[in-house]
Image (cartoon, rainbow, N blue to C red):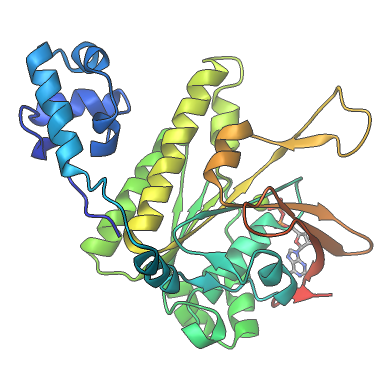
Length: 316
Ligand code: ADP
Ligand code: MG
């Protein structure tokens, strides 16, 4: 929804300087509008005068203006609410997985995170009146758990042609966190060059590579900074193209915890702050699963029960 201004559109920023800035994590005009001149001098090796000129231009380029309430309301009306196929979960999160935000499911192994991802990849293809967006899904698979067979089963359950549904999902296996981040950047091309109506981007799992790679090397702060950058790229994509983002996250054991739930989500407050909707999944009685909404700014915290079946995510 916002226009993309390139760094090289700024006076005094050529390709080489833009590259240096991007490497240091300053990859948007906004990041330059709020950088300090000192930091810019250090990172890009420019003079103080040039630094001030770049910062001022970045501020000018940004539409830092205000919007009236009715304009905001109009924009809200375009928000997609994608069905999980399960009314209970849809209601829990205010009607479905929303576009222009990140929805995160976290929970232990086998709690249903990947199953919901598959169901959403199918449901986004449904027409609007059936809870979809007549769109294409992009599935970034970091753990090798994408299963075409499951897509075909969920497609049958949703009343879609299984072969067509499968063709309408673009899957990429991400081999490490850098690869995962590059794949997100390529999604703009799918939309702009290949003209695909991408309305859902799945990253399953968001955190697994980051967690594995930073164990024993690098600092936690480095990992968090990189994860933050990754999530910002996802959010920018969501806002630019009015699309939905669904990510999954693991939990880790809290060894010092004696009461309550002895697990917490990976990625700490970075992932928490960037996700508008956080759903905690756990196993319930028999084969049921429990979904709980965590920390939502405008929805009541609640819990609901569902079940994963052969052809859908089902209400209990
Ligand atoms: P994770 O949270 O680790 O991603 P999954 O989403 O892969 O977990 O959930 C795996 C669970 O989903 C299995 O334990 C099983 O209960 C359920 N499941 C997977 N496939 C089927 C199926 N074809 N029919 C019924 N339940 C299934
Ligand atoms: Mg999984």
